[in-house]
Image (tube, rainbow, N blue to C red; front, side, top):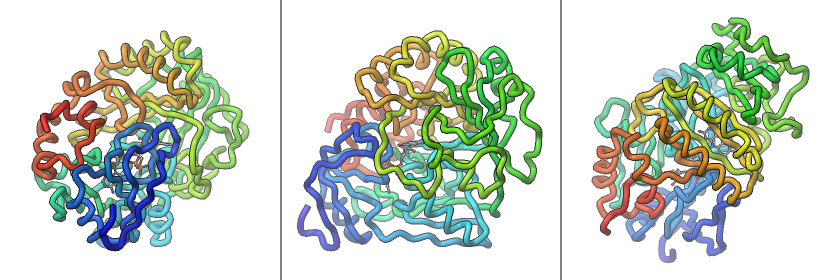
Length: 428
Ligand SMILES: Cc1cc2nc3c(=O)[nH]c(=O)nc-3n(C[C@H](O)[C@H](O)[C@H](O)COP(=O)(O)OP(=O)(O)OC[C@H]3O[C@@H](n4cnc5c(N)ncnc54)[C@H](O)[C@@H]3O)c2cc1C
């Protein structure tokens, strides 16, 4: 793009974090909101990039606005319990700034290096039966829509629940209000080799036995590691009895197994700030690219046992591609396109070897057993299902389509990927 002030463009082909996807669009780096408005107004097809941690083409378009190039801001309002941040701010940067004010976030994804706007756009979540996805902490948004105008929505306003998990389809999210709370400390314990035979009957109770629980497995006979994250004040229950069938780890562990733990958050029950315990990986260690792919499917808890049994039955078939699976809990929310919309969910995650063909074969098998159980894929990870298979899982899809039509009547933000997986094909 030329002729737009305050903007730099780059004609090299650029890729996502895991380097499994090369953006076909031209990346532009505006340095002001006015430049973003002009870029949007002057582009037939335009999309937005956060920290590029999505594993599919969700962010791609002809013109790609790198939202991290805008001036970043964090305003902390202690009286209202809110931080208002620029969309390209990462959770790590935000958490450290909040800590300076004695404040904290309710939860984190597994790593804090992702941007706020990019994370909420795809329904990113951490774990905890009482914790909604990261979007549930959002209280307001400012979005620049297809005509270059700003739209402000806040919790309670009619469009709000449609805007948070916006899939990049509504416009540039330039400002996000987020609920904050007084800083708190967390300790995490890891228990190794808990037999599935003990866990399966107590799965929901184990997942709800601490503020945030993650179970790692390769779908053989055991959960290889259970990560239990307790809030030090108010979460002092002993470990769930079902975990006593395993053994307590005696050193810090990496979820994948025998990997370097330098970038893992401290374990062994050592108390520390929430931002250094709730993510699995530490703020200070930012991997620029990763040798892995990821997929994830969220299921209503009523289908959880059947889903886990089904996964164990196909374990042999997916294991060649699998580094590790992780089970997390996500509380129901009201965000229209959230994978945990209106249902308390079990999230079944897969970290794959970076081998796309093996992953595709594994996903064919996984989707054949999980989609009939009502699974909703994580929007930012690798999956195969298209709009026809997914639309029945999203009761508010028609409302979301109408909202997108209103904010983007010329379909500037509507990519082929969005048509294939979300909206269905359009005539334009
Ligand atoms: C190592 C790793 C660990 C992960 N861990 C987790 C996890 O624990 N839990 C989980 O749920 N997910 C996890 N993810 C997935 C990740 O959280 C999502 O893919 C998330 O969307 C990444 O945010 P991003 O800033 O990189 O967004 P991008 O990948 O850059 O973009 C994602 C979407 O957001 C849109 N977008 C980005 N910024 C803006 C903006 N300012 N305005 C409008 N739209 C915007 C893009 O257009 C695109 O549609 C992980 C991914 C990786 C690589």
